[in-house]
Image (cartoon, helix red, strand yellow):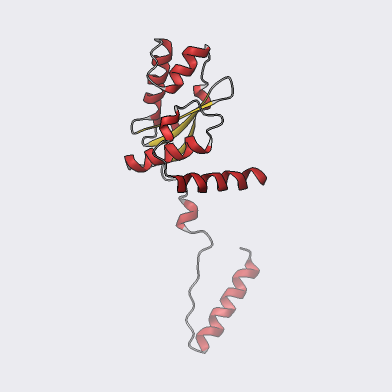
Length: 161
């Protein structure tokens, strides 16, 4: 602030004191603005309790969930594919079609600590992307029809925008 600004402030203070008005100044910078990044960001592969999406080189996707670190779950998927162990729909798809998933493009769709909620979010995500998902159809068999209707309506509206 320049000298002119300080002179105005001083004159206002003196004139307010004459009529018994006390003034207080608010700082322009708050602590919240100063300390915006107190925590370091966690790498997406180190996050736990996630619903994730792994794309395949053919354009299809696999949706899964884990309570462990995503990095560890992806290593398990890689191991299943490398050892030709069809434990998941992703491994079965890759082994059968000789495809490779692009693990580096894995996306986290949801983060949820509660296992049942996470399983529901996984089922809903699989149902919403069922045309391009390699997941087994039994992954959505317990999804109630009312949820399916809402998901269909929501994905239809999103595709129009």
